Image (cartoon, rainbow, N blue to C red; front, top):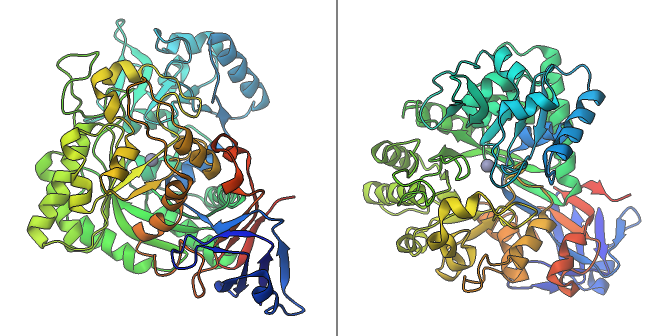
Length: 553
Ligand SMILES: [Zn+2]
């Protein structure tokens, strides 16, 4: 026996044997789960014995929606999370600039849309007052909007504007020049490519395309950055994650890490289908990559699509008008006919689809596409998903269970949670839609399968914080539905159900003999904690594939 974890409160997530005291691991598999006495009998002189000290031991977390490359890069950039007001913003940016004199582009992450105040949007003029002489760009937590100063816009060649395609916008000011706000990735890209990584981390989201002319040194730098991000995942108890952007470049870098020193977490990466790509790419690229990257450590077996943008950028698509802007519902990135073709063809090829859909109009279009696939190909076990579902139309709630569609949601995202401001979100969607916003409990009760994640680096990555947020959600108004979930519901959404979504429920997501040895040992007993205290727990050990990938100091 290689590893024995004893004196634990084991939450196996396996209905047949939900609780135990100890777990034994041999090679990359769970050998036994049982009482301390039963498991102690399996020890040999070379067994590593871990005393859990009465703490929870459970399947490693499976983060169902995140972005490894962007997240890894953001670890080294300026975090503006929680910064409020011009003076604080100014101090943070100036300190970062002083500490990084050689960066061609300074990047700030996770800045609130309302960083200045609830009334005033940021423009390049504010940023010029803070830093006039070096290119600077800061990105909203959702990464769908950025703001750049004048010198950055000038150097990027977009100060006089540019057509950046449907759903993207370089916002223009009254003076006929760009005002500094950049909506969606095509608009941000000309500035982002000036960064230390050349913006390569944004390609998987932005275009789904590949970087050109990458030097050996740049590639080695990208691998080093990814390793940093992977180690960070392991330190948070994550043993699997499902990436929600993709390109061949990232797959090849991850494959190289797997072949040289082993990936510390299992990665599932999609083929990213953009609206300008031919349908034949699904067979020629997506299906081909599925065959090429098909191990338990690194798999490429689904298709990611973006149907809309974000509410704060007025790029999310709603059934009815935005509350603050009559006549505007948002513009989808795919026509209904085009998306239905993608859904039908992916389904025909046996490729599950995961679609970013924030507004209820986008959610409806995605469900319509999945319904079209069933009509065209017959009902199969497709495990298609909708990502985010920030607002769902009441008529569409039962369709998740009917179509077998998975609701992939982020408990860290509701305005008011995890330090996020309430505005402009609440005003933009309007009070009538509040009861249907981030409605995960409603969807669970309607029979939908739900998986949870943070969308890192959109929100902070620690799963225990996200679990806390799912269990402590506060309503915006007293008569709104209570969306708090139980601990069991929440943990399943982070382990068992997320493994099922990947078609790996026969190998991971529960602790059971024969299953892959993906385990996290926490610092305390999660069941004995009040919901408010869960975020204060931390992993003590993370084990992935039978290997200890993180050990608390
Ligand atoms: Zn995402």
